[in-house]
Structures are given as C-alpha cells and as structure tokens.
Length: 250
Image (cartoon, rainbow, N blue to C red):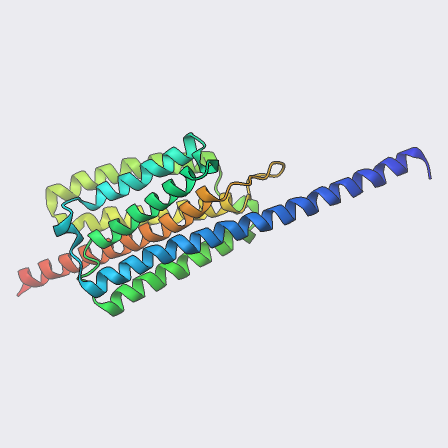
C-alpha cells in the first residue's frame, strides 16, 4: 500500500468521524430546541386556557392593542438576532420568555375569550398540524425546494408593499375587509415558518453547524402562537363581514 492510498484512507476516516460528531451535535442541539419550544408553547397555551376559563378581559384590564404586543415580541427577536444575545445566559432565556409571553398576550387580546370552546380548540389543533407538516417537510425535502435568503428578502418586500396597499384600500371601504390583509399575512408567515424550519435544521449550512438553540426555540414557539392569532383574526373579520351582509340583505 503506497503513501497516496494511506493518505486517502486517513482522510476518509477523518471525514467520517467529523460527520459523526456533527450528527451527534446536531441531534443534541435539536433536542434542546424542541424541548425549550415545547416548554414555551406549553406556557403559552396554559395561559390561554386559564384566560378562557376565567373569561379574563385583557383588553379591558390593560388597554394595549394586539399590535403593541406583537411589536414587543419582534423587538426581542431582533435583539437576539443582531446583538448575538441568543448565546448569553440568562439574557437569552429572558428575551425568549418575553417574546413568547408577548405573542401569548397578542392572542388573548384579540377576542380569544369570546370564541366558542370548540372553535378555539379547532384553531389551535389546525395550527399545530400545519406547523408539524411544515417542519417535517423543511427537514427532509430537497434543498432546491427551500427558499434562499434572497428569495425570502424579495418575498418580504413584496409582502410589505401589498400589505400596506391592502390596508389603505380596506380602511377606505370597510374594516371587515381586513380579513384580506390578515389572510395575506398568514400566507407570508407560513412561508416564513417553512424558511425558519430549514434554518433550525441547518439545511442551508454545509460546513458550519450552529450550536445555538434559544433563538430557534423562540422562533418556533412565537410563530406558532402568532399563527393562532392570525387564524382567529381571519375568522373574526369573516364573521363580521357575514353579519354585515346578512344585515344588509334582510
């Protein structure tokens, strides 16, 4: 056996050992991500269940619109992303908890307690199934099916322009037509959830493997809760439009 064959065998062995370590590290990271995400989702759903049981009027107690809770959560996520606080304990846990708490209050603030129990349960179940499907597809589908950073940037710009134009038109006609704006937002958040799932599973990184877990867990849980808010909002505006046209007809 010559020197070239020996070097090739050693290089193959080193690559296999490295891939094995990466696989084990990825599995450990994914376990952390989903355990923390489950903890955050459980905290959020528990508060939503308590609010429904006690018929707690959050909007009457704290006169703060849903948008402000949403902005609070987005600010925390931006701090975690652009200041690299997602690796600094206990700041990362604090920001993650505040983000999830803000998204939970955003759900409760919008007619959560006035919805019927079966409808609220159906919404939560539907959003849960949709998230499981999105994360399952993103973790196993070919890379050509996953949107790139540039594609998501273009999608974000298009979403923003269409959303602003839709809101301007809606407020000049009837507030109930905000169902169009929220429906458009739901489509964008669904795409963003799919893209975030690919980031969580490191589908875009072939060499470097990130070890962070708090930012990923925060994204999973906060987007899940925000999708619940969007579905409730779409249903609320749809019922308002139905009542409007029924009243005009009869």
